[in-house]
Image (cartoon, rainbow, N blue to C red):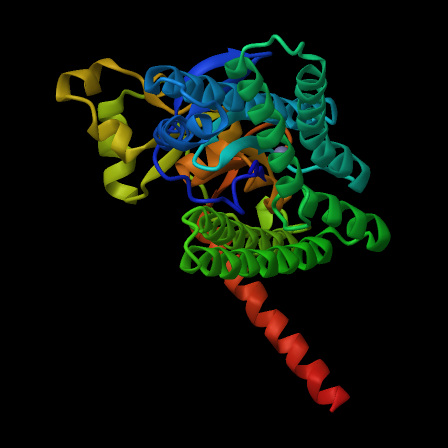
Length: 398
Ligand SMILES: [Zn+2]
């Protein structure tokens, strides 16, 4: 039930914003409001049926407390699974932005993708390896418990063995982007050397698994087992996620090898850092009608981007009192070299957030601006040329 997605595309729509609860080993951990609903649902279903069936004569209070305890232990297991992925990713030089616990488990948000199939394989197996260790540990504890152990403790431990084993089996299905699908992709990638095609194949297999899960889930539900809805929901999620990963792979393939300088809009007009916001409005934003400008230091090097919205947000008094350098967005992710690969640029969270970046030359002076729109235009164009090539190949072959 644990899925990762990498980069800023191939993005799985997150239902609801998550809020931070902790920072562990330097990695922020967030919880989606949906996850709280899931904890409540697990507590309820365990408290109302699982524990009363396992332990005869248990009081409802104890049963629900056990349910909550089990849900929180499950939460800890999933977190450990995600840290397995995240720490291995970090060793391979991929930055981990945060770990989110949400509807169906955990998601580690990475900046960038693995650069070789062996890294990808290690990274895909690290999470399931942690889950396997947890399941085995609880299993050993269950076997070693003396016969005098209270039934509640035994039931709690046995549930953790069961649920971790279930997570392990489910995650190792070769349904990309589940971990097993990542393993499949890395093996295909190692054999062919073509990451794009391997992703596309793994995503198709993933989508197939998604359909099968939906079908089986609905069948189960109609057969009178309400848990079938879970399977169908997970199947739907796998199907959607596999589809968006396939799109991400196409984007990556179309844009890798294309440089920022090839897509940028020129010429570029920059605003010196010691310009008041008021002056920037009257001398730049009004006459040029651009929505944002690079801000440069006294040596002409780009230090950030200032947008019309940032000027708009100020009162007239603030506009005459503040320099553009103080209000500009100075995230270093907004400044790219002309030779930067556009596929890499798309992985920058700052670019995804602002929708544009300043392209600079070797000394750091702005030479253009590249926006999401420029990238989309290039993608459309590359699709047209793809169609043209495949069309002519077809004619030649036919
Ligand atoms: Zn995982």
